[in-house]
Image (cartoon, rainbow, N blue to C red):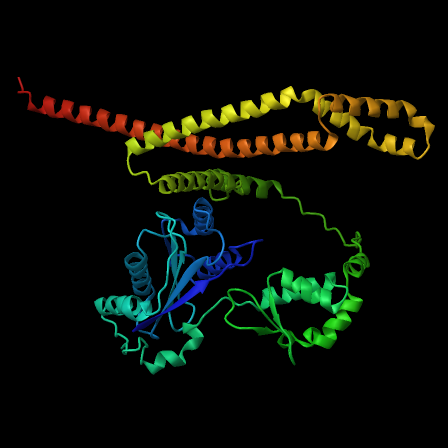
Length: 480
């Protein structure tokens, strides 16, 4: 018997839209809860890079804000399933209900008596860019019936669903500790409140800083805060005596960035000297040396091995390379070699086009080179000019140069501000095109690597086929 609960993961504000999504993915992949990571899987992404892949899909389709993802929890009856069965049911549910349209991370937590599967999938489709839409009644029409069918296939009991679309099994209503498992917000809120207290000068400043962090504040007898992704408001004074309104007002007066720095400076680092008795190591006798030499030569006594960390670096590089190749093929929907060649041609043309734009920007910069040089000299002489204006005749020479460079700019029909904006424009345009060509070069490199690998694979297959034909031909020849 299993029941499926549907949650959603909201936006965390313009500063870091996917903060809650990343925290949720890390939570369901927890090493301790998933049998050392064995009970973790993914669809359209590798679990270790799931958040980055989901984020890139959102950026690609321009849908980085609002609802970030959906979180399904499948809770199993205590003692009814083992780890592997729960994992198989969770994976089958993810593949049947979500399919290949979204990036999905799924896992099973076996750290409680009630095993439960977690499924998190991106709100934006990797294929169409459309957002998943949960309609009222989907749980009763599609989600729980699918869970029931999978449970039936594995010989597990099912949950009855009444006409209103609600499960009538009361045992699951009592099990909200496991069914409603969620990310704990307490530590994050305490950290944010402490940070705002240190920065605030008044209580109003403290409330304003909390709002800037994305919190909605409800004040009455008890102050409570709410952030998107939470289920309900959280009272501040439940964190301890240091978080009552009276204590917060006192802390705002006494705590601050300056006092915090002073407190940390009270105990500066220092070298501690201590005396200890040195014992001379006992020298080995000739017989002992001879005996140890025999042990070493026979292999019974070995030197301490050198670090093997260099081996892992190569494996990590290989893993990142495979992930980049997988992401590239998935992003562009490439399924065969011809599609790969076409994409390589498109990227090569794109690279040429961007290089032309960079060349155009550089030529325009070169044409305005004298204006920019004059502007640089004006900026260098600014302090000297200010001194001259205050009556310091020592800077008369610099003043004349300053006037000369201003005249040079004005002779071309520009003002200083116009030249400054023009310089900033060329700089930003160049940086933008450099960023674009960096991405294109990286993708083109991946495409060329894949083409070379496929070419080598094809050549190897042809060579193997020829060798096979040669052997068969040789076997058919009559023996003389």
